[in-house]
Image (cartoon, rainbow, N blue to C red; front, side, top):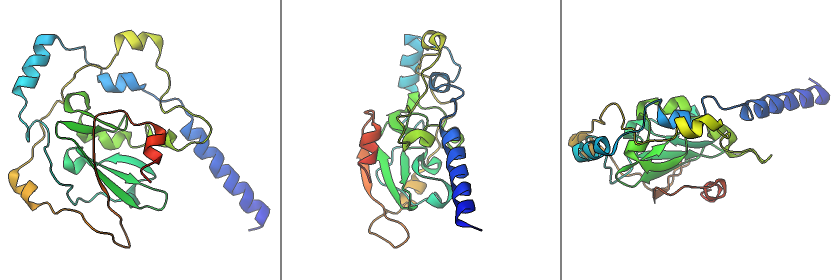
Length: 211
């Protein structure tokens, strides 16, 4: 294959990747976060919070466990680890090096917005893998692309994010927690850094600073 042909192939691949990354997000971010559910009343919110049981309704990890998650299975970006009930998220860099982070108890990693948020604001963790590329596909673009498309005006009123509890409780046994081993040290295949996060929004610049 000539150098010119190779250059054309490379340019074509870059063009396809950029087109995919700049494609319109569907559904929009508000629709995903609302889960097409009506806003909860104050009474329902209070009942939901009173009935929540830490360790059952949401995980309460104190250490980052070893799971089967591998950067070899995903691209560059930030990913909820569903085996931890989404309390842990992993960052994979361009070289496939993984860094691990633990959301504060009571919060989970929201794969749609890429931040730790209160458990009742996070869509079902079981569906997180379906959104691995939703925001990550735009995270490292250099052309000024926005992380999210501007929602349609009617969605600002009709589909605004609401306190919508996950449909199923997170099952987490004490035996599982005791069986977890703390990730430590540095290996030739994987580097692990532990960082406890807050529910504050992280910007693209903040995320790049983790590297």
